[in-house]
Image (cartoon, rainbow, N blue to C red):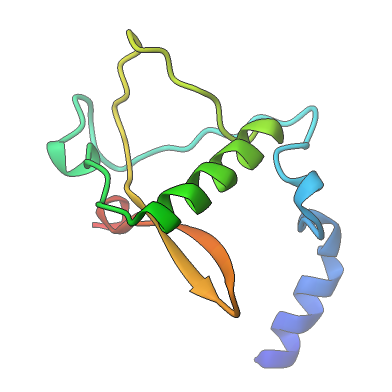
Length: 108
């Protein structure tokens, strides 16, 4: 089973980003994310942010700016209705920060 998975991953290795610059750069393809709930979405899918320390907030701002520069995220206008939000946290590993979304509500 493990060998089949490795073979499959190598067969489609071009489908995976190997550096940050490749994120959000697929041209000519659109992807629709279809949720298994009907509008209006339940409050469970509109979650407030988690509290963050100043260090985590600073790291979060860096990650968000990077994703905005890559075109993965965009700023939402003050008058735009956001139907689905997810809180994110910063985790630390070997002194480096990583932004992690809490998508548990989407999987219920």
